[in-house]
Amino acid sequence: MQVTLDDPTKLVPLYATINKPRLFATPRTIDVTEVVLQGIVKTYEAPRAVLLEHNSEGAARDIQCEFAVSCREELTGLR
Image (cartoon, rainbow, N blue to C red; front, side):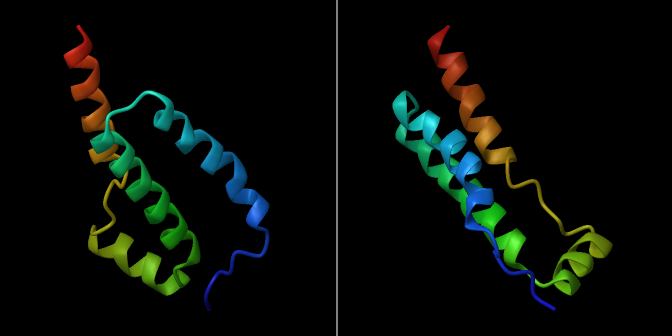
């Protein structure tokens, strides 16, 4: 069974939040922000069985990790 995006308005707050870095972030951070968004949408639309398989194998990865690292590097550069 695949979960479908039955109500696209559920993603509007996510897109709004992810667009905020475009106002001030470096191109690298913007790129990893887009990867996070794509990962969230991909996960949302993945069949439940695939998600369970990833979790049972410990293969679920933190899709926000690279974003956090990029933000930390930017903050360090501003100091």
